[in-house]
Length: 166
Ligand SMILES: NC(=O)c1ccc[n+]([C@@H]2O[C@H](COP(=O)([O-])OP(=O)(O)OC[C@H]3O[C@@H](n4cnc5c(N)ncnc54)[C@H](OP(=O)(O)O)[C@@H]3O)[C@@H](O)[C@H]2O)c1
Image (cartoon, rainbow, N blue to C red; front, side, top):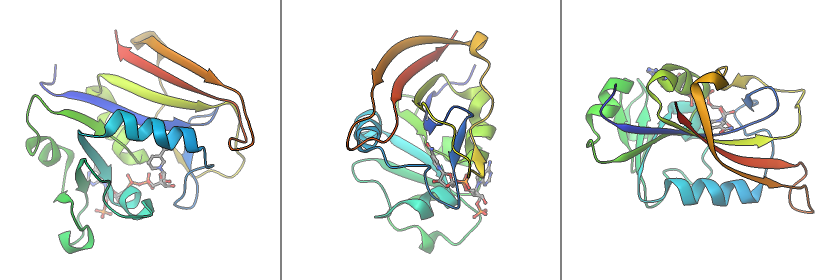
């Protein structure tokens, strides 16, 4: 049992795809609001490519930790570490920590993740190059769900799902 409280926040399509060519698969404004609500005031840990995909750099009102072997000067307003262990060592046990991508980082942390904030886009995208790891739903209990229909600002139906490890 790890001593930290770790959540993963991710938006996936029907096949667990999360990105393509450095970008998200689609723009769903309500998911950005949801992401902000879940993570604000807490610590977010991300891989180098996810940092590079942020339009305005470090996320405001959050402690931003970037895992990368690159020079720390490339990541303004972030704590830069070379490994996940080093990232966790920068956190306090009482912190709420959110892993926010991308694929390699979710993969490396899924076994120590306590909760999953998963937005499911009810669509299968054709052009994808990055995935969230396969989820064994026997290991997770669904504790919150909110379903939304497509509308003029959201091209696809989507659901906000929260799971906790059983
Ligand atoms: N749908 C979503 O919720 C979501 C969330 C985040 C990102 N994304 C998408 O995912 C893509 C970007 O993410 P990505 O999967 O390509 O890469 P990423 O994990 O963001 O970045 C990969 C880099 O991070 C560092 N890194 C990651 N894991 C590490 C580990 N365990 N130990 C040491 N270093 C590690 C390495 O940096 P160095 O090479 O610098 O050493 C590695 O090359 C974009 O398409 C983005 O839009 C989607």
